[in-house]
Length: 182
Image 1 (cartoon, rainbow, N blue to C red):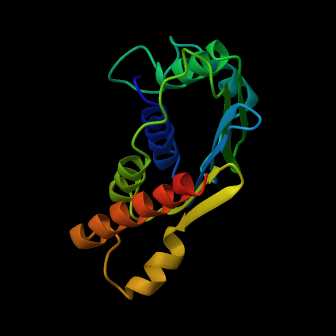
Image 2: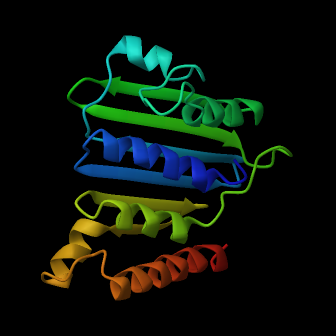
Image 3: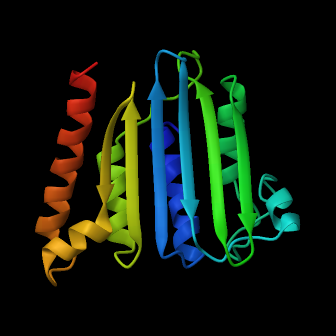
């Protein structure tokens, strides 16, 4: 994939299929330590240890429409190719956590991509999930919590087109503030 945000979107779709109620996405850009960390954690159905071992295999998938599942194996390869690591923690009934770390300055690391668009796409795909998105750049943090936003909306669906447009702008502004402070 051309952007890491597309990997995040792919993993988030897995969380939606796993019937997660809460999805946490954490992005840490630490230029001092020369690392980029992406953590995606859900409270969905989870996987047993046998399935966890299989999901990194491109020829394993739970889909019936095709015989390969490249999302997780490609994300793992991307992290490992960039002097990083990849880890999956999961437990049946307790959810799944994926951690990918990259050397920030690695020449082969693809760009993070359009995070505002990725986050609003996830929100729009499944407005029942509470999404907590935290993005840190050199110790400055932006957080979006849809549970809090839903309370403020007082019955207006978070997937309402005007709310989505506002969310996109809000996330963009928050991330721009992080980069302008560094």
